[in-house]
Image 1 (tube, rainbow, N blue to C red):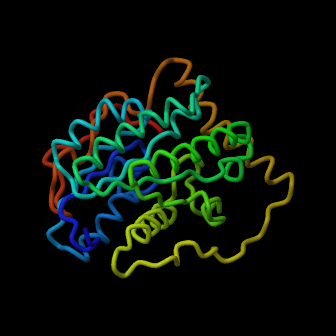
Image 2 (image 1 turned 120 degrees about the horizontal axis):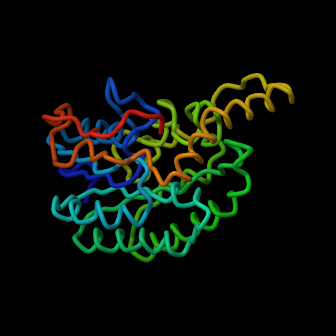
Length: 272
């Protein structure tokens, strides 16, 4: 299908696809999938868009909770992005995570949908304290590329470009993209599907900025650990997820610019 002819776009995934880091639960979340839908609608104003992503979901939950509803919507374009919540857990199994994603790829592509996925940037360059999980990211990326190749899935390869680790593309928690980061991801996907008017300008580096002194960088790491890493670990130890009690923000197809009648957020308001 020509990328200008998409009529039904469904986004599956976790917090990144839900839009955390781009807006908030008060004014609403935008995020890269919403931004991609806006680009699609600029080409085809008849576009209908659904977003099934929910924060905190691991790849297995995306498969069990979101695949069925996505298939029922019969999309002609679907984005599937998950795995970060898995690789941050102690018992990470890259083969198992990629297996869940491949099942989603297979089920959607069999229906004729054009499926798009992402690879993940080097987290060790975004948050130095996350360096111990770098090998997990590289392993998962390789498995995602292989699974995508087996099913004709388009890969928007964010991992291959240095700009994706620029701290200005990430929010203060370093887990979610900033508004600028979400815009770059949307531009990456648009370019990957050859959307009219898209190009590779999203890969261009940002203007240089001053590099903090060693002590400043160390202090920033300690502040990040106290503000975000500590609370995240505490929730894991309590068996809690930021997605507890939450549902998808756009569970059904709606024209772009139309919002659901009731808010999707039924859970407690807390940091992601």
